[in-house]
Image (tube, rainbow, N blue to C red; front, side, top):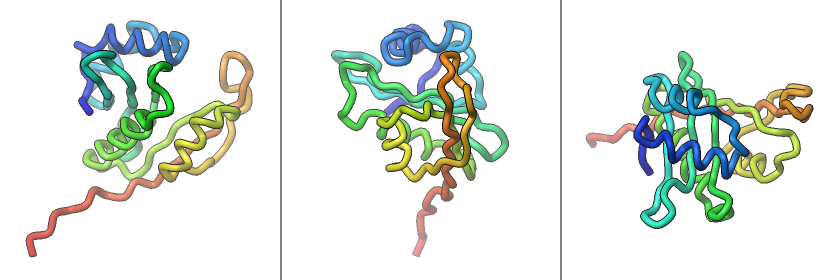
Amino acid sequence: MIELNLSWLDACLVLDDRALDGLWTREQWSRELSDPRRLCIGLTNDSAGLLAIACGWLVVDELHITAVATDPDHRRQGHAKSVLGALLQRARQENASHATLDVAAGNTSALALYNLLGFRTAGRREGYYRDGRDALIQWLRLHPPLQSSNN
């Protein structure tokens, strides 16, 4: 697991194109990877490069998850769970107390993942996506990171 920065811009664009159908522009990815209030975690391997990402924006004490993606050739291997788990842990370290995201109401794979990690549906945004699909608002209460004991 690595924290992504601007040096990963081209790899993020390729993964976005393959996994999210080109959701974000180069400018949007540039902002995501350079803004100090944004966290972006990646999973890589030597042969395939960037396999998965999870990104979010810290706003006061909340993490607004902006992107979760896994390369289509590497799905169903636990990569999204790994990068999202690492992002949530990083947000805890930054004292975030909640995490939120929007997900297409019909995206059963993503909903299963978010449920596994403890997210719960808090509402619905009707017609949220360009194609008219509804989004479900997901919320998770983040517990503080475990503190080491000196006993």
